[in-house]
Amino acid sequence: MNNIFELKNLCTQVRRDILRMIYYANSGHPGGSLGCTEFFVALYKKIMNYTSNPFKIEGKNEDVFFLSNGHISPVYYSILSRSGFFNIKELYSFRKINSRLQGHPTNHEGLPGIRISSGSLGQGMSVSIGYAISKKLNNDPYLVYSLHGDGELNEGQIWEAILYAGAKKIDNYIATIDYNKKQIDGSTDDVLPMGNLKKKFESFDWEVLEEYEGNNIEKVINILLKAKKKTKKNKPVVIILHTKMGYGVDFMYDNHIWHGKPINKEQLYKSLEKLPETIGDF
Amino acid sequence: MIFNYKYQGLKQTRLGFGDALVKIGENNDKIIALCADLTESLCMTNFSKKFPKRFFQIGIAESNMIGIASGLSINGYIPYTGTFANFSTSRVYDQIRQSVSYSNKNVKICASHSGISLGEDGATHQSLEDIGLMKMLPGMTVINTCDYNQTYEATIAISKYNGPVYLRFGRPEVANFTKKNSFKIGKALLLKEGKDVTIISTGHLVWESIEAANFLLKEGIDCEVINIHTIKPLDEKFILKSVLKTRCLITAEEHNYIGGLGESIAGLLSKKLPTLQYFVAVNDMFGESGKPKELMKKYKITTKDIIKKVNKIFKKKINK
Image (cartoon, rainbow over all chains, first blue to last red; front, side, top):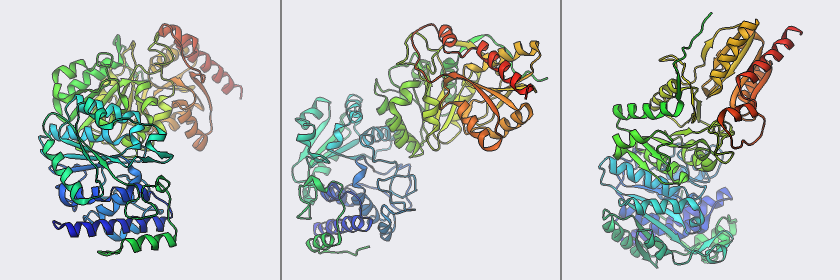
């Protein structure tokens, strides 16, 4: 998929998927999912090289992504299904009994595209580092990507990992921080101010990139391409990606109350009207 | 009468881990070792020198260590993490739960300095709840070895088993007595046949159980001594067979009686063969500083305590 117009349409479709999944489940996390849509579309459609079918959990000789903030599973499931990992129709089963699409992503039920469980926050960077080391041991030139919430950076384990990756020069790895400045209880500045994130990462010996328009697909592609060029230079790479929680749905826009709140039927249709383009709903 | 052991002097169980790690490292280039700043204590120094590219010093960051191990395992590596039992389990429980157990990763969590026999460091470093924590995790194999030989063989055996494992061993020098090729994951080890009382023990209490049984034999009580090294999955058949014969048992372990081997066996017997059982274990308390032997005595987990409980249960049995 090369055309920006097509990618934008796909973003709209992914947002439709997110809203419909959460509506049908009457549960789930729309805010961060909508805010990270461009990131996922860019990553899976323009940046990473991978094989979706057959999915191989070892991920040898392909790029590999880990979602650390597992609660934004709707956007993850949508892009995985629309990249051929599993049938789009399966999105219906999100958060329902006997489903492979658990509330938070897991390999436990064998869903293609997922290599580890996440949900309890702060663990994905350590896993990504371990996996990046395995690629180095294998002389596998492909890269490892991960996504983390900004609220997730409250967790102590993340800082253990940030310290380790910088100190041990894990340079085949690109982490992205979804910097929407919102978490469950309110703004990240109110809950636990994290100060100058860029400087913090720099002082841990990371290569830091920042993109202020994280909901502009072209900008997101460009920053990811730039990040790729910064790899294999003795430093891990992080992208501080400014996004807006609930992007694409006016009444959710930049509002922390939509972190983990489902929508009713009226809200669903109101939202879908704002996002008219469909490639084909599930 | 079978006496299925041979005393071979004193040796640390952790040394069995360190020696075996080098051995499997030589034979399998997928073996990785990770340590959280306790390389010497875990006897991982030889591995780190011999295979520097496959040894990862994580620093004092156990959560990160578990996550990195999990990530390594996705690509087919077999990571062995090493730190003290307390920092291997309770400190990183959620990391193990989500990134290892629920994700079914082939990570070997290897823990030294378990129980109270690490001694002087006191309760912060003594782990008396780790078996319970680990056995509650679905899919986790839980092994507590009793001597150098068994730890050596277990360290090798778990490399050939695909799935998460908790391997628990200790700090001090203890009797080395199990025979070669006597360890199989999930298989009870019969150390002495007997007909009057079954003693089932794990870890450092196994040798004490043998000593107790030998003393009691002279007193006219013929004990059967079984070593359960694999607490999960439990060798149910073997336990039931022995208890069916003796109709009473003592369990012995260096762990809280809540959550330990004794509790697992009580759970089994309550379902399949309700039987009177006495526990030689720590009585729901934290440990403290002291010499290992002093601590074992104070917390009532010695040969003498086993003898006492066997006498008591045997009397009850014959007076029934």
